[in-house]
Image (tube, rainbow, N blue to C red; front, side, top):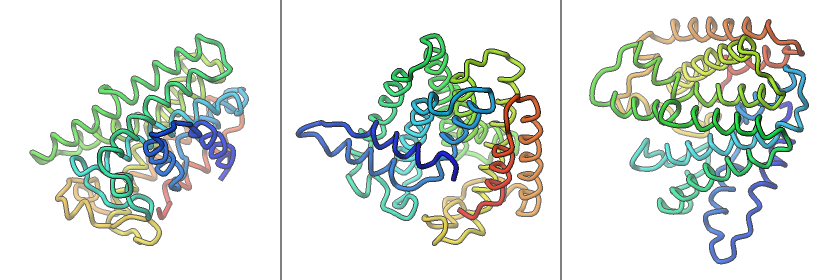
Length: 286
């Protein structure tokens, strides 16, 4: 996929952390970051930077930072106190490979390294400050963590469609929003109309992404997904599939994808890749 090699090289450099006598946590951080993944969020950062007239290379620190935050969230999601998953992308989860304590610290390490990485960008200080504020807000209690909280609370009842959509807009969509906004910020964009169009793309794409995840948990192939299917049913989780059925979910994912693509019309640069990327994510098998 476009940009992935450059992203992986940059991540490898940022994650080369000499820590004599305490290498186990950096090892766990690298293990989780380098354990495959589609690099959806950092690709979005670089592409939105280009769509706004910026240079993708200048946005690489921002792209790596969003992937670090995403990976930290996966490490913590897999812990026994959360979703209790033993596998991630076909390999043992971080806590199964390194133990719960070191996995917890690896997640913490990636979260803090993300902001160190943002600060290293060769961009104007005002844009770095905007990036720090954006990522912190989207990843925090008003964003991704807030979605996790609502998800945990929903286990005590039966969430309806409105609550489920809110959970997923925060839990999944907030980091998508951070990714596209970081790309805009790296290009120096301050126009609120353009930023709102970026948010519309991200929010629509993020919700479609989660709906497809729910579909794959029912219909997916374990060998392609790299994790067991049927976990939502086993854990009695309310998902879009349980509320709407498979056919309605597919239609909704297509509608949201169309909305995301329409939002690209406001951008001055080439958005053909972003449009095809949205389409590919809506029909993915893993």
